[in-house]
Length: 381
Ligand SMILES: Cc1ncc(COP(=O)(O)O)c(C=O)c1O
Image 1 (cartoon, rainbow, N blue to C red):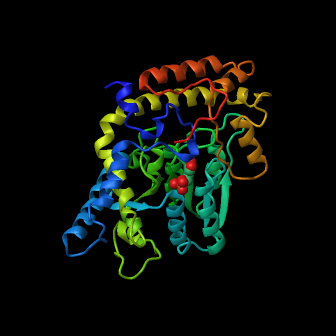
Image 2: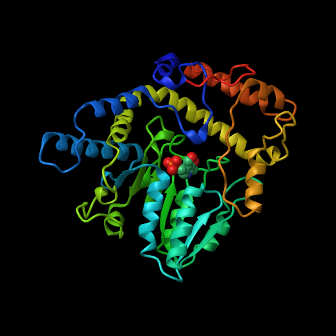
Image 3: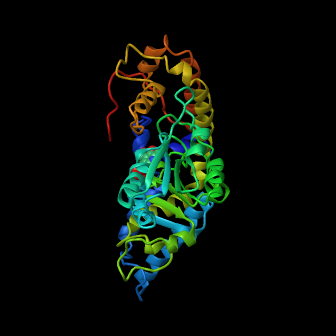
């Protein structure tokens, strides 16, 4: 399979441009787009658990989709929950957790996390009277301060909420070590893998966490969210649900009628696109990992970098540092990479040549047109 075989599977890049809009996620692969459309046209728009063919097809879809997502994340299909997005699922989850917390309990988060894994816990603590504390990260190398985190995980800690990878600066905490620290005092661990899953293989079993959250729109799928919850925990949590909803299993958590079109797209994307994605994923992962490793080790150097040409553009390290000092949670930054920017920062960034070489190689490997000299914004399809 060549790069050209991959490119035409992503209609969103048919205009020749590559999209570096990380917060917006990835372009959807064609089979996922088709699956959503085909499900909508299938006549199977029934609800679950009915005694007729369309309802059976809907039940089958959910079961298959849980299976393929469980395979992707090496998790138990009985704990795979679908929802609108990671943030909505996390709020629903922490609302249930709040009912199990009491004054004197503690929830530990991190300042490296996206606010979607901070505010839901903060609010759960406010409502239950529990204490919410955040571990810092190093402003020198961008890594989570594991010593500080370990000191915060006290015997009264009930939950630790940690990111698998920072969407702001890319550093990846050692989540397995966090799980060990938390489980030692009987606390449970919620891992936000929204930024991790597109870049690294994820194994819930290997990480050993109690909950892992991810969003298919970050890995070529539709706008949706996924929670992998340890099944006994899922069945025990006092989730807010209507009485007819299942008492056990993932459906007890999926309030109302799920977004079946996007679940069909999530399933199809994974099942049918794996061959197509192998080339792109392997290359992108290799690039992202090596780039982030290099980037990671150069954070201190980058902290001094400021482009006077693109004056509003701050380095991620500076931004993170500023947020940290302000006590605020990290924000997402958005960079659209264009050749003139690379040229403009050449004098300021020793690694420019390296970055450009990596992008050129990636272009060759994937057939994607990643860099294009232009002074105009790309036309949006
Ligand atoms: C690390 C991380 N966590 C959580 C989220 C929120 O995910 P969602 O948009 O599915 O709610 C994002 C979104 O960009 C993210 O990057």
